[in-house]
Image (tube, rainbow, N blue to C red; front, side, top):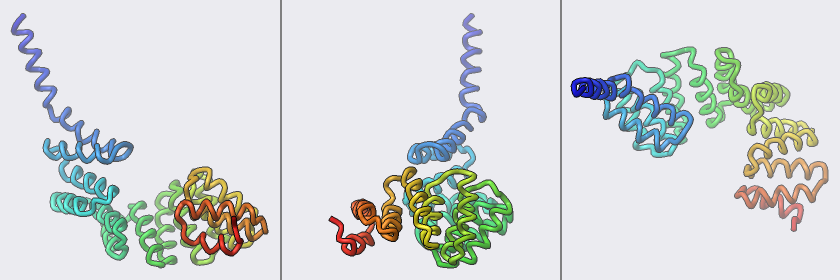
Length: 269
């Protein structure tokens, strides 16, 4: 009986410390990173690294989590450590790109996204984020080309159409932009596509349609000061000044500085 107990205890210890069970720390950390608490994921990735579980990936995702939390020094240290362990991984260059995108160093971000794409020409997310960096550098034509490739690889991500639509909006290709926002919203209703389609409609003088879209956008995110401002502009354009003033004042309360001049112009109370 005693030997049976001892054997069971030994089996329990072996199972508790087997690679399969230990590997669950990294898997749990990754789930927290994707769907849960970034701070918790960082603590768990740290434990995974201590356990020697998927060390290169654990450094990479811990670095990514630090990037999202805007702890850029910690992020770079972890990404450097991951790169040192696995320089062939295209994702590490992608996460370096994301780090520099967050730091507003868009040219460096583009360099890293380009390296990631060179290692995996089918990396659609890298094309999309490179497009975003190009938009932020006012290279709207280059952004459209990148989004064309991303959509050619994966036509089921609403954000690719939303981002391409925004680039076309900046190029004053309003009808084409609206078509992209329509495609985005067909995949998934989202605040950004509604707001940008509203802006496209307003620039075409279609303010009633613009107001409908701005309203749908604000139903998803009721604390977006810029959308209140633009809806106020459309209300003012069709001489609904009372409604315009309500939106301008709300926009100002939420910290949008351009609302001050609009409030003065309409003499909002």
